[in-house]
Amino acid sequence: LALYEIDGAWYVGHPNGTSHWIRNMQAAGGCTVVRRDGSAVRIAASEVEDLALRERILAATGTAPAPAGLIFRAARSHIRAVGRYFLLSPEQASS
Image (cartoon, rainbow, N blue to C red; front, side, top):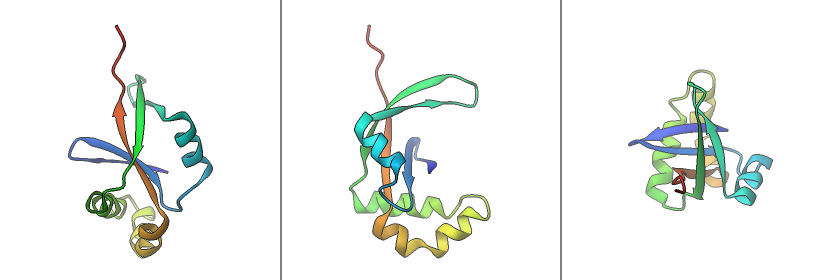
């Protein structure tokens, strides 16, 4: 599981596809992200289907610190075939 920021938007996913984490994300429709400062942000998640955007996410996986980035680059074709990624959008607070 990894979180990537691309052009200010957050994406999260798993390179091996439908893991338990992905199933849980789909069932819940979102998650809560706890930021480094301890603040919690409720997030809605929608799967990325756009192929060009998926390619940008795949490129970002290769920039992860070693050894992860090296592994992601070596496994690019596998990740392209089965990896699943989601756009995370902060939910609006109800008033």
